[in-house]
Image (cartoon, rainbow, N blue to C red; front, side, top):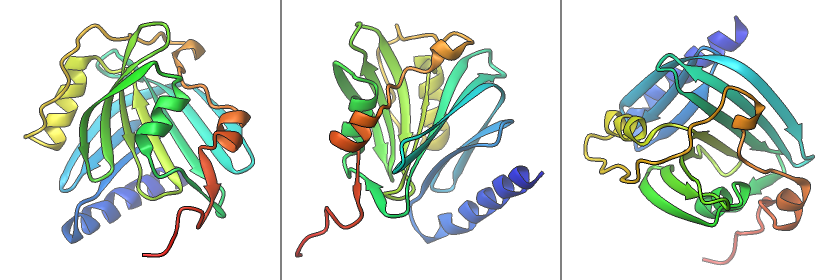
Length: 203
């Protein structure tokens, strides 16, 4: 009940703040996947099939395998840093590293909401949404068909052009659906997160 109230409060807060400037948001409450871009909201209903949590000391990761009402299996990942750390400022770089991608194509970008077609190292193609509310969090949703990804983008932004490549990965309803490869080396030595202030410099 507390989690559900928190989710509704987040939705209400976003709605109020959306009048103050461009925002984006992705969240999941074990029943609904919420996406927001400016004043436009999209809610997808989906059941939680499995959840995995990892702690990398300076980064906390939750990975949720979801079966949407459409029948698709998607993964929602919520990565948050320790209070004294923040993510590398280049979100596209982070996505490329955690998927160990051969290459990555940016399909859409607005107000810290990004859509990618990620070419995995085995040649498969994966549709990915990525979003940051601030430098200390990162949300990922992946596994949608290209038709569904484009529909989602146009619900959020009628002017979105969308992706073109249709032959993409269809995720299984198992732990094998998780395709990111977070590990200690990536988090601390690449690094994906750094102490707050490292990227600050004279203006």
